[in-house]
Structure formats: structure tokens, C-alpha cells
Image (cartoon, rainbow, N blue to C red; front, top):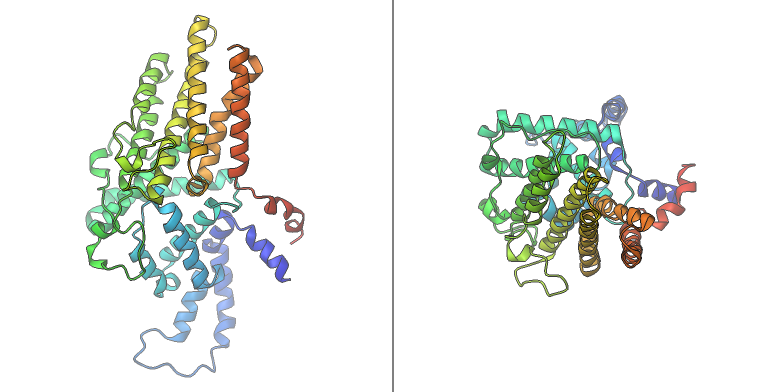
Length: 422
């Protein structure tokens, strides 16, 4: 029985975690409340100095169900994994404030915070290596739409009343959701628009503050040293936003023109020219002294995203070119395609494995999209035998790295027959 339970636990995905916050779960918990309250009949009367009675505390715990997710120490371990490995590419939480709230009773008494804890755990487990996740098209689209509505409401109606810390965190979250929407658009999914002409981009750009600078009142850190206390990851976020802003602008012309796409292609190529030293990709050279694990994760994310956007726009240009121009122009475009692939391979093979894994499942589709174009080169062979052989070799290297990075572990695949009967 314990063996089957551990197998089921290994299969948890975002959908499974989200179920804890859905109405059926809450309703079921409320139905069981009467039964559990009967077991409290023999509990001694509480001390009058205690503001929360055992019955009230138990009721709150049952309603929000955090105890059903995992023991607190397990939840804390997952949350620490988020801050240690993923926070640098999604720096929208203040670590000390979040951990303080988690260790208090807030997660059992505040439904909104409980939902945030569950969401963070789900995002962490689905992102890190050997954690299974699936595509849930309708659910993802609905959730993204709700997130966009919520953020727009907070920015236009609640932001003036927020503390400066909350305002900065909201700005960071705004651009992360914007990036997620653009990423979905890049993959051909329906685009949920967050950015509108009424949005003041300058006013919404977050300040480049570390946690210590964002909230000095929480110094020193009671939770021990952490790489994000005195290091801001917002510069990387702002450059990521710049890349997606250029992508978003490149898709506004209808129908698209080759000249317009080439214009934005050139802008995207130069978008990372002025990165801070710790975020600049240096190939196989040693990293600068001011870099750390978090900045290396951001570097991989920034440059692979840049290559992914370049590849997408280049394929649009190749599609528009068709057979209407001279062969030399087509060969130039194919050469650009191979250059993108080789730049990607350089990053994948020089970056440490843990750095790539910390970027989570978002990395896999980008690699696949860029590599897909190689099939066309190998199939047609129109660029010459030597280049076709080169494309074939690059494809093999890309597939080898992709197999190594893919979130679907061999253990999970072997467990499929057992999972089907649990």
C-alpha cells in the first residue's frame, strides 16, 4: 500500500495540486467538518488568553487543506527549492516575508495565501528535473486568462494603495505573465493579451532591487544566507521583458512583411548587447566574479529565449520568401538558421547541467522549436551535401541534449502500467 501511495505521489502535476483549491475539494472538506468537530467534544476548554480556539483552528485547517498537501517541512523544502533554483528567473516573491507567512498560521487561515503556497509547490514540482507535467490546454488558457484579469485589476485599482514592496513585486509579476503569454503565442497557442496601449511601460518597469534593498526592515535574514538577499535578479527580468516586447511588436503588422520582420530580427539580435557583466554569455570562458548560480540560470534563459525568438521570426521570413526570390537569398536564410542552431548547441554543451535544469520545462519546447527546422534542411538537401551533413550532425547533438534534459524520466515511464491501476 505504501508502495502504491509513493507512486501516486510521484505523478502529481499542476492539475492535481490545483484540485486542492477547487470548489469540490472545499465542499468535501466542509462536509467532513461536522464529523471531525464531533471528535473535539472531549477537548479541554481552551485558555481564554488564546484568541483562536482549537475548533476554529481545526475548521480553518480543514477548509484550506494545506495539511492535505504535505507536512510543513516538506512544503518548506519545496519552497526552498523554488527560491534556490527558480527564483532568479521569476523573482516576484520576497523570500523572508514569504517564509515568515508560511511558518505562521496564515497558510491555514487565509485561503488566498494557501492557494499561493499550493501554486508555488505545483510550479516547482512541475519545473524541476524528473517531475512529470502535462499540457492541459483548456485549463492553462483559463488559468492564464484569470491571471491576466487579476493582474490588470490590481494594477489599475489596487496598486496605489499597496506598500512599495507589494508594488514592486506586482510589477515583476506583470512582466512574467506577459512573457508567459508571448511564449504561448510563440508556440501557436491562443494569445491572452496583457499589454495594452494604455499601459505605461516605464511606470510598470520594476526597480532593480535585491531583497535586502526592497525591504530593509527584515534584515538580518532569520532564514540564513541566500544568494538573492544582496543580488537583484530584476535586471535579467527587465531584459527578458525587452525581448518579448520586441517579439510582440514584430507580430502587430497584418499581413506581415519581410522588411518589417527583418527589422525586428536585427533589433532582437542586438537586444542583449548591453547586459550587465554577470549576465553576458562568455562561451567556455570562466564566469565573472560577480556572477552566481542565479545569474547563470538567467544567462541561459535570456540567450536561449533570444535564439528562440530569432528562429521563429526567421521561419516566418523563410515562409514569406518561398520561391519568389533568387536561390542565393534562400541560402543566406538557411545559413542564418544553422548559425542559430550552433549558437544554441554552444550554450547547451557549455552551460552546467544544473543551470539548464533550473530553467524548468520551459526550456524543452524552445530547443524543440529551434531544432525542428533542421529536419527541413536534411530532407531537402537544397543547401548542398556538406551543409546537409552538418545539419544532420547538429540534429543528433541537439536530440542527445534534449533527451538528457527532458522532464519525462525513465522511472516515470516505467511506472505508467502501475499508475494506470492505482
